[in-house]
Length: 163
Image 1 (cartoon, rainbow, N blue to C red):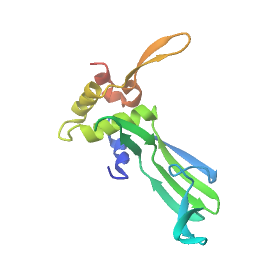
Image 2: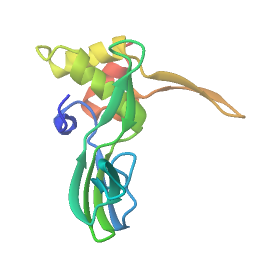
Image 3: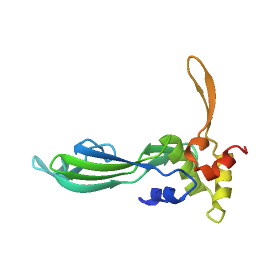
Image 4: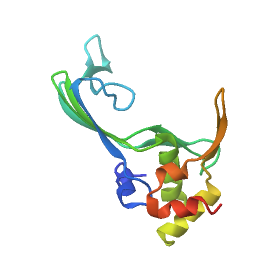
């Protein structure tokens, strides 16, 4: 999947991710480490070592993997744009509702449904073949949540109740 493919969510049956802005000392990873670059190690010129970026841009696409099968999508990290300037950072991350369920369902929609189908038929296929229904328990109650109800745009919610 290409790095900017996640932007297709803005024109999909899924709710639009909110932009989460950060301004301050460098604190947002890209994805696992703070923004950094690699330089030759003066102690051993055959090796390189990481150093913090002083000035630079980074873009991290949606992080995901498949686990047991080719359609068992697992979310790892949200997309982030980052600009670093002498120890300070401006970062914008894309934060959808219920992000684990959102990105995993969207990956199934994008990668495992035919683009020849209408958006409605693709969502029906997602809900049927990649259900997002979980039972959640607390001390006082147990409830069942269909996460499609929380991540789909209003127009497509009717399909979440059909199955």
